[in-house]
Image (tube, rainbow, N blue to C red; front, side, top):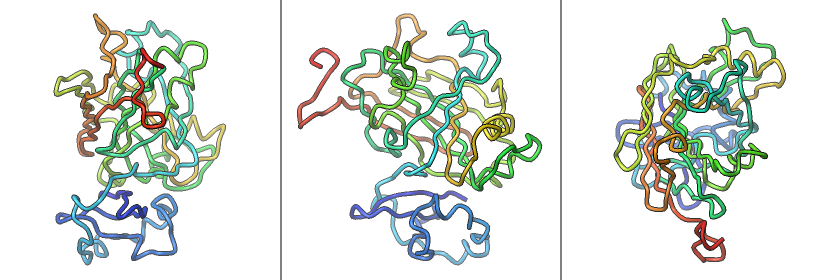
Length: 289
């Protein structure tokens, strides 16, 4: 099942993707204002219930939002693929964790904004985990039961802002693209067996399998839940494979007009265009900031 958050006439809604469009769940479950709030009720949405639904909107009538527009937490894992570790000469075996803010996100087909103050804006395709229920001290053997579903993520990085203040490199407005939708857990029994591909202007830049994560999905959930309570709608970004622009020869950084795709097997393909930062209707670039 694919669940999406979207807007129609500037009104935020959530629904389930059907063959002919989107069935509006926010109309059918008005007591829940967002997909995040609905996640704990997900067992109500049985295949029999979904089979009775008909589309309320065609896809060309909606604006995609991040599957969870308002997560309480976005926890990001760094250096979680061996190829990426080799690129950055990383030797510490422990997970690297940092945070991304909810208002730094954008949805499928939305514009990713290249920060004016960065000359090293980089792409990173990642698998996103969306948590479905509250939990602490979760066992790795039970961790997947806390997952509502999975999605694609483009975790844009201002590399030249990551040296002294790592979080600053990850939290510029509309630098983290999330979507197109949430694929529910039962559709993906093993999240560590998925091919992940990132393309820039049609050129393959990253291609790896989530089987090659250093710390796999159940371990990440267990580790994070030891120090913070996971809640419905929390998002865990599981790290990016090798092939990032920073470590290419010559380096390849994102520029206005670029087209990005992050495709993950059994989930879908997140697509976005890169645009320059605008301030008071003035287009800013790294040279005039």
